[in-house]
Length: 349
Image (cartoon, rainbow, N blue to C red; front, side):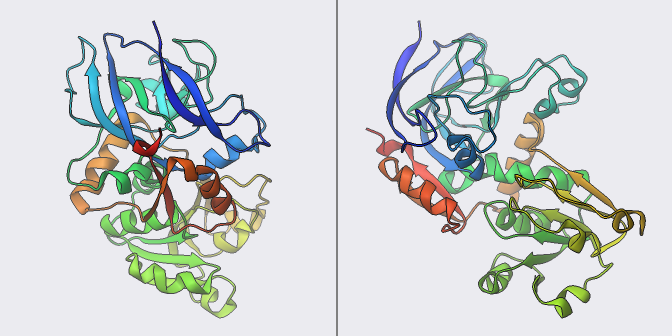
């Protein structure tokens, strides 16, 4: 029988989130159950709560950067023991048999990826509930081993922000000899700077904010370009092998296509609500491309966590208590965070 826990969630797109009681499934033979210690706040949580994408279901408990300590394991579980650190990111299930799943690309499952919240729950019916809650239950094969060496709260955003930037950086073979532009310094961009630098690339930050030019260097960038300065932008025309575009607002993609060297690519990981217009000459000249990437599979997410542990990479966070979630969402909407909110879920009473 399911058991009931406390959570913070939304009942519609207009009202503030508040305390809810939600069910979690009883432990199955291949399940891991853990008490949630911290959960990051992603911009997509805000979009979902506000129904900006148009497919939100209520009541909704957001949160997909979930970390905690294991309290129980099913009889068939082999990789986790009670007391271990564990994490759950965006993906908690998939069909396992389609071509995408067979390539460990569960994020592209052809039969529908089960996400950690707001997707159909195969076990309990209704929709899945996320990490703004006391406890999570997940299949072992979709549960991640959190490195003991990393600060757990600061590592929570790696489960979405980290894998979202690690996957394209790896796929486009970022490493020594590559010159990589990171467009935007926010929750995604500041982690991307650290990961790209750890991969051995020369990292150039592209930002519209004067204040973030200096912060780019603190984060490890080799250079920072103020995008509203035509002279600074012209100095990098045709010079970058990759531009990782983390911007979720409307912007002129052609400006950044023109920074690419031959065979370079602008890779979008942000989610602008409106379509982006691409000029044909900006891609045919130099055999440039405009591409996209979406999180990563489970194996790659574990690989990313291990890479970040090896290089001491975490997110810059601001911790908030459970009763401060609505205020954090309001500040996030205004861009008033540097660079990721994390909720201390032990304060949920």
